Image 1 (tube, rainbow, N blue to C red):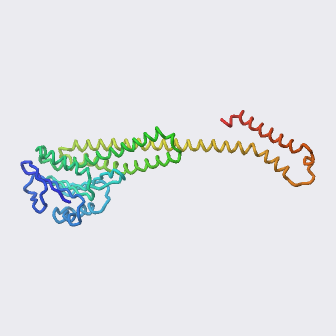
Image 2: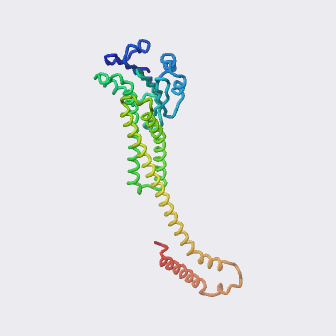
Image 3: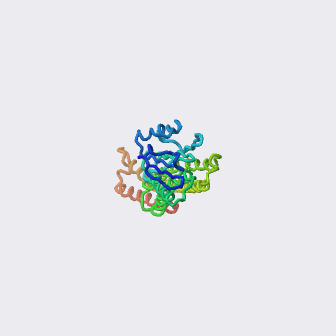
Length: 318
């Protein structure tokens, strides 16, 4: 699907013009959005707009790292939106020129739709002038970055629940949840950090110094810095939880092993006595004694009870 927004020289918005009827010279600036384009529509990047072949190749071969390239007066951005359920990156390509904005994405994205509605709303109020392309690029990036926060907040809520209710679940279940959270944080980090680096390059680029919305791009960069810090903080918390669970599990294993060791130690002399008198030698004086069986039982009982009392005094059962 291709949708168009054209701004007249008097800054009136015109929506829905077909590309065949769109004369760029008649308008102050134009935004063309390619959403889930067909192969025929995608070829218009070359046949209609005549963009650089390398930029077109980046649009058609996914998934590129967020970046900024310059082709004359044209700036080409590769941006990453975030799929809310899988936390996988979704590529959005953006061509920015003094009088033209072209966005290209293979999926229908709420972030781009929100940016479209925002730009159209501002255009209808007459608040978008000749810096409309820069404002449009900022709005798209801002909406995309805003969508990172709910995913991170959801992870933080799960992490807080894990800390508060962790005692109700087994160590194995807790460890599985911790590693699942770390995996989601890693996927989120793979999107946020490259976008942060891209915005840093934008606000420090000499090509972008003339943009009146540069301060707004700096605000997006601040949001990405905050997201990066929150991700690292949560990763450290999951690492601390993981280490705590491993230590707790090791302590429980040590207690179990100590208990089994005590039991084994108590029964070792008793097993020795039973083994000696279980031998089938004929010449064993104790076997002929009338009270030998009861004497051995009493000896085993006293020996076992004595070892238990000694272990208790040594604190082995604490």
